[in-house]
Length: 421
Image 1 (tube, rainbow, N blue to C red):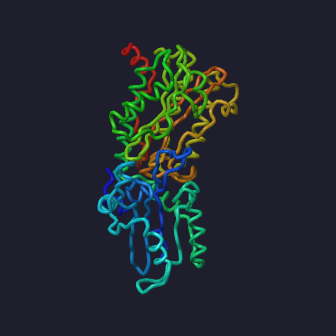
Image 2: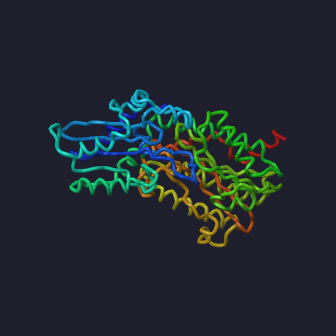
Image 3: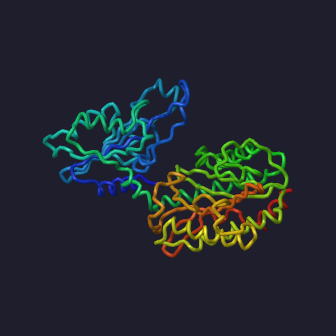
């Protein structure tokens, strides 16, 4: 569990990156309109959550660094008994302070006055010259106002200030996971394993793909409380297994095909991301087995190869060489250059509070990074797609496969189906 002390520590590390006489202003976001008077389910901005542990909408954080002093202010919605009847419980100022460790918790209507005060010279400290905002275009602080709109309004009102984007500073903090974050991730993986086992038990001809997606959601929620999936669950059978992000799980499973599942459970917003491929009918055909073994070999080779100092680009080059060599040797491709026809995505990305945690592919891995390991082969002409994805924790010597207990060996998969029949 992430403690209040860890949120405080994160903000102190961010303070150390901020310039003197500067202020950082971050927003949790607001719900986005879906249609008419209906909103999409609210998703808190992960950078705001990373610094506060607060997950409710209409909240903001202000961090001031001036005159050798550090000040923090958290702004939340006021108590409204009518709104709570409609939308449920919201944090009190006391609860928000306990959760975040921010002592000064105010009502969000006071934000504008407080910011204006900080951006004006006064007797306590020199006027702030630099403002940091998270300028992601998708962060809304009102129905029609983004943080970019907010930046423009600040500059118009306080023309002498400089506004910088704070995203990369926070991304750098999120790059390495703490021990508590890794523990959260292990819980997400454990819930995901339970969900995958539940799905595998129901894989048979005649079942609809969406039924399996629903089985996964029910299993992880029964085990985990309603924390939800890391992303929209992919259940792709037969020819659909060759589509990387197959969007509509509406088809019916057919005997002799494979089912490719790409799924994950969240735990306190930390996202597991796992792919497994299983035979519909309990046994792989010879051709499916050949393709599967190449992908499995690449998956294991990447986990063995990776170590601090390498980049995700290095892992991709390694994977392409492995898959192309093995496909030619197995007679699946004529030339190694043809690999792009059957393998067309990256083998790895960072994982954390987002399924695709923000980090460039040329940044060197260090202990504490969590990344995916997901080689695949997709033969559209054969209707066979195989992807095997594990989650790796980079250690000082190499990597720990956090998802190692989730079934993936052919013999184990076929034995599982022999047992459940």
